[in-house]
Image (cartoon, rainbow, N blue to C red):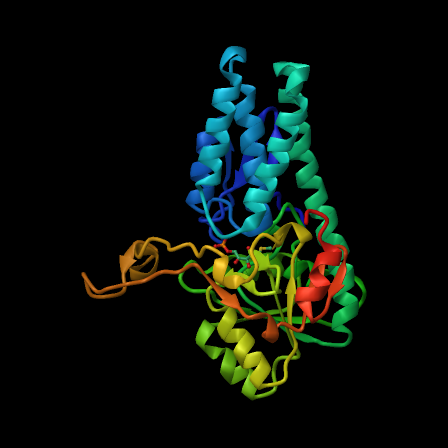
Length: 344
Ligand code: MRU
């Protein structure tokens, strides 16, 4: 896909502003790490792996402008600021941890060397993410066999990663393998990642896509219109419980009811062995205004109580398999997951 979600360009970070899609393709240039942190918070960039890449580039960008004598104190401030942006996707913390390791292990080489090495590490995280998506795409394409009508939720595509995508990476790999594939995309209230982003990406790639509102999933499954579900993930716990976009759990329950396989696609950087189960995964609560307003216009009476959890937990027993760049993890996850995750 030709669209560049995030790039390092001339010592600046450039992001496609996803809030404006599908109407406008605007690339924003960030010169300061605190702007990168704000962009993550404001969803200029979103999707677990993309947030990880943005955080890594944010560290590299911040480090560039730190003066030698304040280096230790300033770099800590940069890590802290970026860590506070969004709580659920573990890729953010995984990427920050990788950057921190470089800083700790190489600081004795001097400030200029550390700045260069941090930039190299961020670029490596970016490249590795694309490679991981391509690999997991191939594993997924094989696993899905002749499934043709694939339901997905939110956006786990090129826009949610450094490129290619996880759930949409599987779909792209199926298409590249010559399979006939049709995507059913859930709209994904309230931020409309499915309607705005998944539909946009797939249309650009000429992959047939049908948009559903979130409450239509049961209807389509009941009428035998879904062969498989493939979604992305923000964090997978050690027992295989999956945090993903709000609404994923409901889809998994429906899939089980209708004997439709429910697959989760994500790089191993989305697996958090420090979280024993989904119960320990922090769920981001976002601004109620995202629910009460659509494109700036109120859609509810003023003052009505609104809750806006951005993610939910799908229990591992509803997950048929987890597709990673290292291979397909099958149940029992508690036992099998550890063999795939190097950072245990
Ligand atoms: O709130 P978002 O848009 O960052 O949520 C994104 C999702 O839930 C995706 O499904 C997940 O991050 C996987 S992206 C490859």
